[in-house]
Length: 349
Image 1 (cartoon, rainbow, N blue to C red):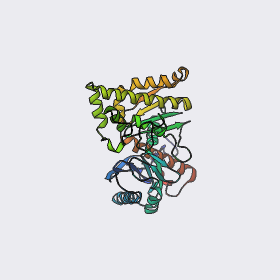
Image 2: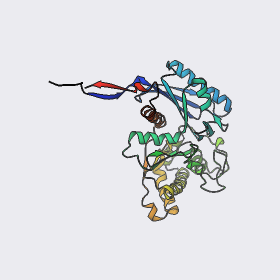
Image 3: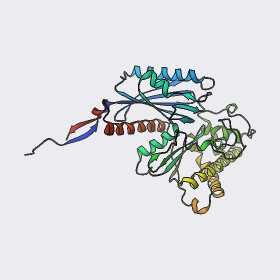
Image 4: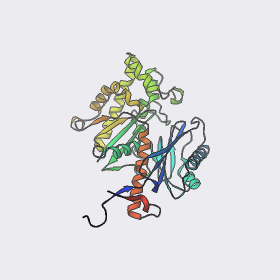
């Protein structure tokens, strides 16, 4: 006959808390609601015009979208513990502002303070590529651990960086902006307005510019790109289009130089390539190897481990939710915040 209390397991109580993840990208605001167990229970996409919206108008648009989403899902102040925001471009997490983004014509746009004031929940702002690194670490912590880097190739070029099992964002949250480091001083025009950035040779508009033999000074906003740009370029390359094949090779060389700088300074392993542009990796790989060989001594080159991960748009959302959940866990067990005590529940076995 058994004695004592029945054996129990601790399990997460999904109803204890909720988090809203917001992803800000060109023309779209994605809103996702997850429960305390990390399960997505609702999502919505709102549109706006990235081409001419002002900073103030965007903040108002964001607040309206978030309030409507919270109201529609009946989120109370006590259950909504965080709104976690991921944005394209350069962010200042400490100030809660989007410093520069291809999604906005304005600079230094405040998003955390307006949202927090309007909704009353704790808000955090992060760079979207950092959230990809978070998602990979969360999904496969045994593989994506220690010091590793994620390079995002798409409408632009970004990087997320883990150092000693921690996401590295620097003092303000703007660290690891590899896309806006100089590849060729005074070179091609970047979407950020400067000349010679790595992105100006590797982003979607940059590859189109090279493939069409447009002047390097051609403004990115005058180069037609869409969600299908990389697919169209890959189809052209598969059909033997020499101009596109050459553009992909040159983009690969630029990527190789960027990887070489990263490897020489931090030696992350692995270096993961992802984003919509990863479908073109087979056409860029030879150029990448060439750039690595030209830019990095052999002894350091031997340690470079490169992986490609098929692009899933939800990686950013999953990383944003994972970061919020990690903060929840730390807060619950270290601060015993009221409202989080119900975060665990007992289940009899």
